[in-house]
Image 1 (cartoon, one colour):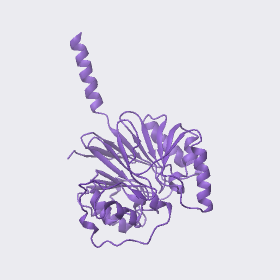
Image 2 (cartoon, rainbow, N blue to C red):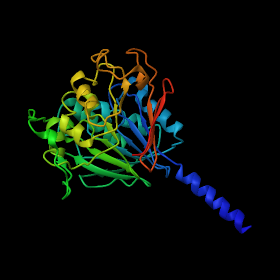
Image 3 (cartoon, rainbow, N blue to C red):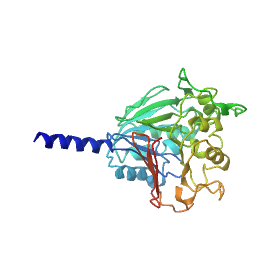
Image 4 (cartoon, rainbow, N blue to C red):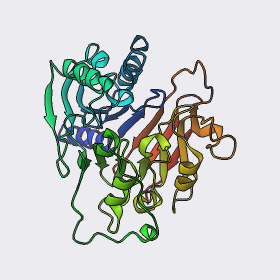
Length: 333
């Protein structure tokens, strides 16, 4: 009897060791909605896509949640208050329970649209808890280490032994960005040895501040390209400092995926592949990933295909294109 119990415990331990961090990069047509599902079963969604359109983006998020057997989203993190990131929050909260909304504080923008989005967001979180975070804070998803590295224009402090970033030399600052993009909430998500960076729509100067002259972030395995792959972001220093093995671009057909940014990312030392949510019309044949690595090829009437990543504690991970079921595994290093 004792042997049988020990064998059962051993089998259960092996089963538990096989659990993965699952990440769904959901097609919200050039916005962001990234669902993280911890091996513990807890979940975190970064951004909610666009409003309107018969709740298209909220429904796509819920479809991904169902695939992951998620019935409640424990944390919804809003990177910043633009329509393609916070716009779908109310429609989402009307359809699936949300434990807590997390953000960087209110938008710095005062346009009519900004005020409308703020009102919609307040309504979205009316039945949930709400927390404002700052750099250095953590998001307590059980089984994961999630650190806030940038929020409301502030940055995490550089570690005492932070390495210098050689590619900072000669890179000039851009004009000051006064939009909410520059105040994006960014996180590093870690599961065992696996690390992923999601910096929202952080723009050029703030990216430089994160890694120049010293790299405050360290390296990652996966880089969700900043600002959908626009040239106003994705500076050479941020990409080379992070040194990702894989970049995932949450672009739309005509938003993001800009050739200049794509080339910078592609040239990053150690990069193995770029995966894209959409074929970029601006990129043409030269600055798009091979079709195998692109979830949606058509500009019109796409089916909202997503990219799924499954990461192991040893740092290995697998990426799958839901359109063609193409899968590639990246061994632990």
